[in-house]
Amino acid sequence: MAHHLISDTLVKLVEDHTVEILKRWRNQIENDPATQSFTERNMDYIETKLRSVLGYLGKWVSYNTGKEEVGKLYAKEGIELFRMKVPLCEAIRGLFVLRRTLWMFVENESDFVTAYQLHQMRELNDRIILFFDRAQYYLIRGYTEEMNRTIKDLWNLKPEDTELIFFDKSFYAK
Image (cartoon, rainbow, N blue to C red):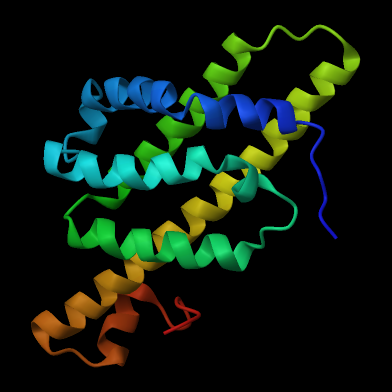
């Protein structure tokens, strides 16, 4: 059974203004000294991925989208960002900036004054935070799993060698 969000109106607002939100995000990223590895080459790839998230925000914040689906997507993104040589701290910074840019857009474009409207804002905020928390966790996990694989390959290390850095049972799926 599909659960509908009372914040569906706000979700639609974001989906309809994805391009504008991404322009604001890109401007912040390009002017942020903490995201220097977001090169022109990387930005096109990253923006394409973010466009699919914002353009289908309703799917990602839905009660019907499980953490496994978010996990698969963001573990792959973590692997790809590692391969693109984007430092993990910058990848996470990019997600922080996106969440803040998205929320500032919703706040600025919404003229809500009733209790129901404020409840819509709160619900959307809760769902966005849950989505981004999951995305960050799985992005970090995919990134560090790829780092572990790369270290093993480069120096022909055994699992017990890299467990000194990544710790036993750091990874849950192969």
